[in-house]
Length: 296
Length: 283
View 1: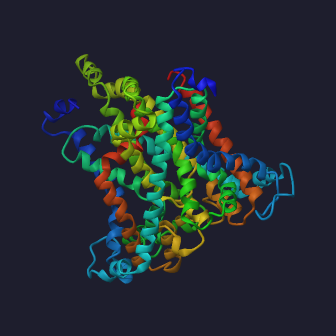
View 2: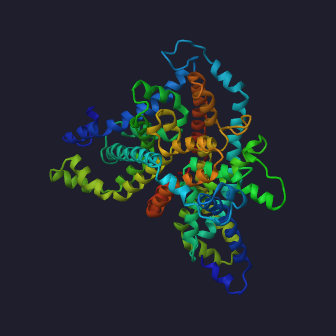
View 3: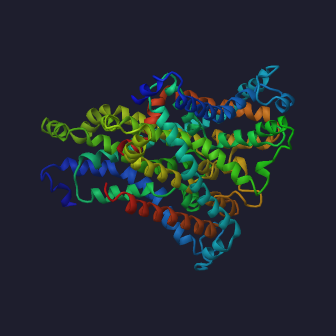
């Protein structure tokens, strides 16, 4: 530890402070974040119900079971679907609203707050609100269909539509967050660039396309990053809406892990799912960093 | 933007009309489910079926009253408040101490330890939820507030330390050196200079951690067994199970549980928006 004092040779306070201030955070982090991740890799080699100590070593069989599981395939597909919808619908929606609401006009701040509000609601509450909206007997959607004399659909009860219903809730809940990211950037943007464009005779569209949007690229990448990370950990919203059903049609990887690993106390199997999810997250994070953060 | 002027000069403004229409559609999309939920709590089940959108013909105050006078509702909110407050306090203490060392004290291995902590940002708590459960069980913390609080603190640390360290770094190093020469210890400097100067960032980090903990579901779901320790997201799922098709009661219950969040949001908007979009400020 002599290196600790190299910067100022006689300052023993440094060492003492570091030794006093770092351990609480490091201990908690190691105990409850890093160790479980490492242990997941170890447990995933066992067939174990969590009681006693793991003895029944089965190698990589748990991974085979996971990949052979039809529901896992569906869950993985759903995670991809959420990312696709986030990028192709939610992101443009958030961006266009931000372009409107970053300007100063009466009511702009109130609208920003309204659009941001779904984001701070608990996912559980959001899920319950929308299971009411979609309810085939009492729900809002049913009332709209009845008003046109049509049969009310039970969106959440059919494997063909359950995921569509969830995707709508995702857009409802999260677009406001992405909008706020864009507004924050737009407000910090150098006005001179935009005005210079106008003086040079650029049309509104040209200004947007060639000046404003390029200046927003870093935020667009950040927004995409949050959308992907959010998709990979989506769980709370699924439970009140569908619990992954019907016929496993609306699982995400985390709700799959919970349903097939935690609820049945299959520690090895659940850990294998966790390790796969971990690998997906880390691969994504590093790819993102390599592709997009090179210049930063 | 100044280009507004060029358009509104023309009297009738088509672009502005489209904007208004677009905004109106989004307002309806966002607000309808929320309003219908609040109003639905005032209706009878029969009326909810025939009139889910409009104002109630008969205001059924007893839906809300029954919940507000029940012990259960306050117990759930109380549990959530205890868990969230403990999580915020412990996170702020542990994170600000670590962030202070990372920001102000140079030593060998500092960068390495910092990247070690930053790894926590790469994956969600769910990835290791089963080993986490076993760890908490072996520590005999299952079914206790601490069994929920400590893992939540651990998972909040990475982001909190990152945000705090960025702020602490802006406190001039000369200030610390001057204080040192005057015989001020690092701990005193932390206590009497760094922390008071950092109130805004502490409020921001505290608010994000609070909202996340207040809303969290997965960790309490796995760690708690007894009903009387449940925070509200667990309680409301049980409630929905019991009253599965009595939507007027469920809607009233949902309204009453999201109300504290909305009130907090209105009071602490700045901190919440700043905190939750903190990544973007850096750009």
